Length: 428
Image 1 (tube, one colour):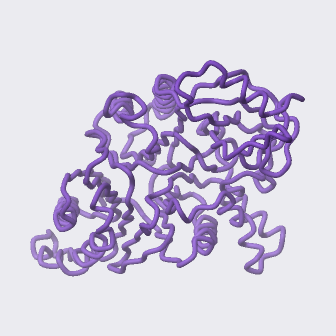
Image 2 (spheres, rainbow, N blue to C red):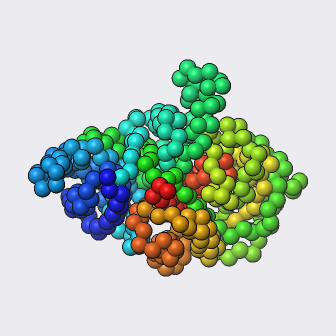
Image 3 (cartoon, helix red, strand yellow):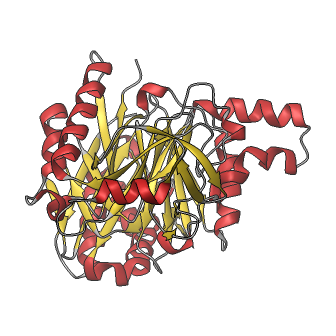
């Protein structure tokens, strides 16, 4: 079986041209098995039509090509076993560059990759449970997860660690199942609101608020995540919280620390809370913060900073509403910053490049916050150029997201203003 990967890009407002480009590229590979397709602009309005066109093409349109295959191989049989993940983002990208603020589609087609699709559930909670079950069944797979932005909740994946116990397993068995899932690599992001994430598998179309592809048959994903932020002060301990409210930082009212941090900043920029990387001894199943508590990941692949939006303040108590914090969290206030974002991503990619030296990179997936790109840097294609500088013409696909999901410490957590690069290498 081949092990090729091919990306493509098409700039158009016509969904039929997107379907044609995707199916043409699919035919060029000898044994295609998995496709990723992301659209932006007005194409998002035709997402279901595009996915339906792919489903029809895989089951019927390619059958006419079967006679040209060597050895009498049936194209329709090979194609009908393929899977596509189709979603809409604020922008799309390939290794050629990033397409922002216009109608375009970007895709990546793989061969020699096994894919298990999860999706089609009507409720996002059901999707989260199905994802947890699939991860336990395939503990060595890498999971690429997309969730509609308006369907995501902070504790959405908190039930995954308990799914086995709810389904009748004893506590010890459930904990063992959670440990077996620890080898999984989970990353992804939030797609456009009101646009379902679509999964095409075996010629059938499944739509829902979330979908995932569990990819296997190669080495696990190597993930590098880099937020675009500049800290406004040193790391300090969060010494008093109540629920989602941060009340004190090293004994000082959190609102006073926020005010002091923002003093002198021009143009009233958006302020964020940065959380330092989780300590090594945090137990994933006990972690109170958003993400996938049962999935441990190597610390070397984690982001060292997690950004939280400031949702409000309470002047009477001096508190800042930021969501629940992990125990013993160290925090600092921050602002978006293109210069430090560029440096952080470059450093992460450099470390990743050194870590995979001697391996054969096959393809990459890049989840890029919609708050980055040209609006942040003042120039186009900054992130994709950084990836090319380290990995050359590596086939790449990605989309701009409302939020990102990536490893942080020992959990997979919701990220903001972050670039998440997942690298897949051929098995050694």
